[in-house]
Length: 589
Image (cartoon, rainbow, N blue to C red):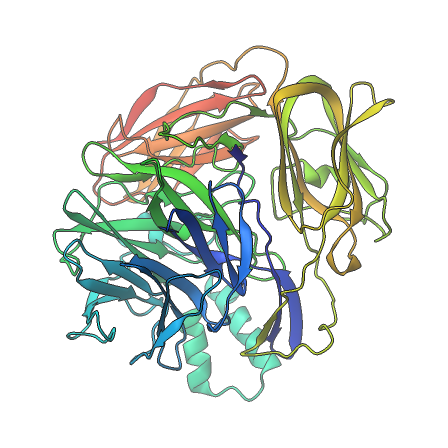
């Protein structure tokens, strides 16, 4: 079985009312994933439901029953025979809920005594229960012990993690950690004020803080390993490619906590779809550790997001890590013990390749489906069934997998009849269908069917088609039959994986580094014929746990450093035949 991020599941549409208008987009984020009674349960934000799987690849959707579906960032934990659920609401006391059967049973409410945002429950080996929460660019992550009988705090809450951008580079706000200018901040505030003329000066000041450059410290998750407590958190903001999960370590569940050496342990700023923050870490049935987290689109709205899943683990020194080197390429998910650092079997064949289409809208041409950027897409000129997109791989390749990524382009959809906006939003729980056919050709004249989903009753916007044996093809064509709301076809990535022609890339040469500040490192190397590069770094030569994938350039500024740490790095090259690892250099002593 194979997966390819973003996770291949049904992402529900929601209608969001904000500043006098209604936006329609897909959203799923902030995943909380656990094993309960030998099944995997995945609870994300804003889906009005949860997903269940036997194998971490095939997910079945179930609606939430009797739970606050509009509350954000749901948390689930297994305590005894129960699955406990809680979710965020800042203006009212938040309850806890529990059940012995999430699919068929009902949830029992345990009335809450205080409001919280981004909750996380943790039960220790001695059955004592701890609770963590926080989501703000002004306040920290908090923790407290709870009474197991009534889930009420047993004492005063403690501040556990504050932002510290003078020391922790990955906490710095902005796309690529580049902060907004004061002019940009003022423009955002003025835009809100013009659409809401009744805002007071106090409200405007609150808004200035909210949209400023202070990072959001949020998304707590606790794990225990070899007697140590690993409190994970996310920063700097979900709308950025730099959204990451960091980790602090302590000898007690309420600290004091110390920043771990390996940070951020979950970080994916490059590739087709970036972002790897606000997640959860879980051991599967076979002893493998997995990290699920939020991935970013943020075109139609800043909270337009998806879910990712990556191999994780603890090394021999107790450092928590996550492998995201090729974090949106297909990888095999074994139902047994796995090597979390295995390289992908198949290489990316479609990057930068020419593409054609039945029609396109100006500014959304066919080639935008091969640029490895989920924020751009091909858009058909009509919504009529039969619009198609085709990628030319330039030569016959051994194709093993195709990922079809459908996009939404500023949908203008009427609320369904009878729908009611609650707490500013309506989640569309109806079953939509995404239908298409996928064909291949060696010569562009005769075509064969790869996959026919013209009668499918599923709505998979990031579908993955795998053929382990492979087939020969030069041309890959997707013909769209039906989409939700009868929208025009938009594909952000018709991504093809397999093996092409030629030899492996040469090892990177001419690597040069320059420390720009205590938190920033410039890396460059000689440009060659490689398709792309993975820049790896870490605090020790055998712990290159961080990575940033880039295409078409031979320079990168790493802005996720931790002050005072040594930095070792390696630049790997890849093409359609495989990966060539570079040499390890010490960049900062």
